[in-house]
Length: 135
Image (tube, rainbow, N blue to C red):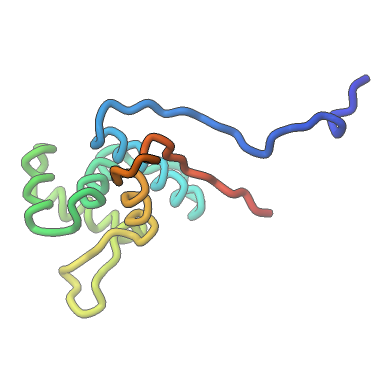
């Protein structure tokens, strides 16, 4: 009988996600990020609409222009967007400004994710998210 301890097993598991364009790439990266954050908090999933709104903020920043773009592109009301923003803030994806509660920014890890996935460097085709499991 073969001993499993004698087998060399890679500590890395790879999974390839294909994407159609930069928006699709960022949407998938945001979905992975949001899923990981939810898992860390003991939750299971984030709704697609929240991922889509968060993708707009990740790409364009939190601003009135971005909000209007979301409302127009997604066909949602201003009140619905306010409710979504509240959920994103409670979940920690959007961070309130200390001095002006109306201003928000995206989570710093999401900003780093954007910088990794949206840059145009020669290594841009070699994007990866690494998940470290600790006990």
